[in-house]
Image 1 (cartoon, protein in one colour):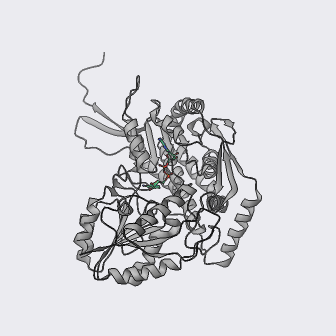
Image 2 (tube, protein in one colour):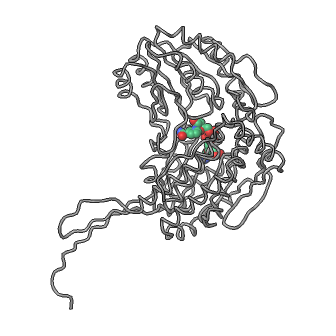
Image 3 (tube, rainbow, N blue to C red):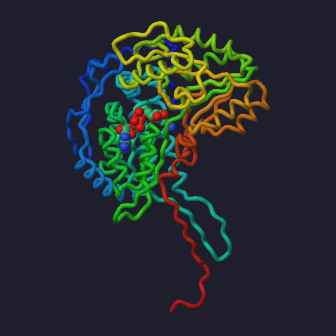
Length: 519
Ligand SMILES: NC(=O)c1ccc[n+]([C@@H]2O[C@H](COP(=O)([O-])OP(=O)(O)OC[C@H]3O[C@@H](n4cnc5c(N)ncnc54)[C@H](O)[C@@H]3O)[C@@H](O)[C@H]2O)c1
């Protein structure tokens, strides 16, 4: 297998490449809405209980899906128990080859997959394309990582003794995923489970069953056996049923803190007859802060903050939510940010060149409005985007300031295009404030002095710190991603070590001295 390299994103500055996007969205719109089944082994059960729609035009149905029942959960886990045995016995190389073929299947349909993410989750084209690339990266990266793990790990050897450390699959993995990276996140977690020889049951987000079907098909077309992976579309109750079930060994979850904590609590219960402890890999929300020192170059800071806070309408878990800016440049930065926010181009995801698409659903739109009103009541709204379309779930991007330190706008994850600016005395003051947060997902720093950089690196609790650049866009293999504190269990998706969550280590020690005669 050749060395891992990130999948190249589309060169959207080229007109012929841009033209392929138009074709892809037209082709998508010409097809009927996707029908997403509950898919267990070779059986598909269709239904229409779940309806996923285009956030930009909620009357447009993108996919309808069956909702998994408790009987489906049971059948999927029975299949997974069977499938886990055969898949674990399959050589690691064959498993890796299946994932690499799945990557190729997706690569050949990258525009179709991106168009689906544009429609189903209102991902703007560059974001949708990056989502597909990241999904491919996860397949390729974990396929290779699993081959390394299959070698075991070296141990100290002394004369007369042979020590071996090997890793085996844990059994059945339940993957529970969010909608905001509707291809990359579920596929990443599923690929990690499969690469290491586990059977996987996928419960995707209710908002994006169409994208889930696309990645599921990639895996099956790549040659992952029917019983090794099942698809259970549905809402939170389906995820909760999987979490509770004693047949599940590992839970890979990405989503909100509230649900993640419930999963951690529930998974700690050992049920009658259960002979293992469940392992939870949880990637959760954040409240990401960017520190701006007095010597920062505002020409770099403003565009980087706009990208970090408003791209994909602030719905990346890594998005900037708070800016802690040195008092010497607070007013200048706020004025320039306000100018940038007023002219943000808010529009439909399929229109290339927009800055901010609609948010995923009505509840998100209302949530952003609620927090903006709260900021207006207790602080001030420095600027709002001047023009916001009607009809879809568009939230008005805004930048707010002068909030009291205990404002929920500063302490709670909003997950929308709302950025709060705070005045700090100096970088140490900013670090103190970051330190009081229970979240520690991503963070940023703009400073020219290398000592300041070292100081912040030393003090930051976050899982991913970005210095003098935007704070979103982690790449597989380059920026392994995941949060600390209440933002996650500290695992790093797309990095060395991630796959170790999905396996069990075994050490064998043999006395190799043979005494006496065998008679
Ligand atoms: N740290 C990361 O890497 C990362 C990445 C992406 C998103 N996120 C976070 O995800 C959140 C947005 O995603 P969301 O709105 O889909 O999150 P969510 O927590 O509402 O849902 C995530 C998944 O959990 C399921 N679920 C809901 N209730 C459940 C329960 N009781 N038991 C088991 N499963 C249940 C949902 O159906 C969905 O599939 C944000 O908080 C964001 O920060 C984190």
